Length: 342
Image (tube, rainbow, N blue to C red; front, side):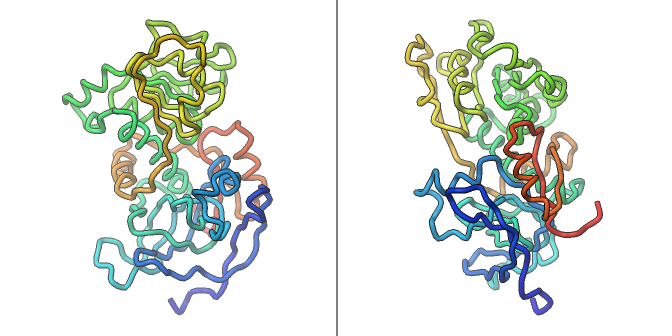
């Protein structure tokens, strides 16, 4: 610990009501929770829309939170809790999603909790590691925790879970985004028939990820596309708004509709007939290291992979966030916090 610097570069949001950011200098964070782990950050990946969260969700994001953005990190463990006797050790390369109620990872050193951490897969470098936690965890939990699919279907060979999943058609909106690209891969790997929604320039990419059918939203709305023979068992919505509304026309009776944008019932068309017994759910991802460990095993086996849109230096944070909010990304935007060769 004596070799640590006295201060570090830190990115701060100037106001919860403005997306303005500034790169400044601050003291290193000091562990204060029994599960706090100090990590030297190598890379971090911000999330689209996160600069609006404090103002939009004041009941969730505490006003006392130090406004450091970007909750995903890849880095090296510097120190662990004094009483810790588990498997992590200083020097381990780890990645995680820091819970959104706490300061993020757009700084040279950050604090994560033991329950959030997982070892970085051996075949992932710093950039792709930072691109993984939030997106993969959200897709994983949307499919297997809330979407009713059986994760045992991910196992190789024939098994009852895979046969059960094979009966399901899954519609994934925003199929080339950070979460969507993971959802397509995981649903296809688990044995499902996947329908992806994306723009015309990304159709080939969505098919490469594992979708058996792709809907070009520039050409056909979900309402126009939907018909009894095309109805799906599960909807994963990553877009919200009119797209979420359109999902209601595509879902089967008794189907499951999961959104990370808004409660699906809030977008249900008032004139819609039928769609009885649809189980709809809006959820916020849990930053669980145990889930990330399972995902990491699939990455090491070469079965799934993160998608990186672009990589920026720490000083290019403004351009990175502009790219992030453009709505034109394919995969994650990553910031290099530390200097490294890769």
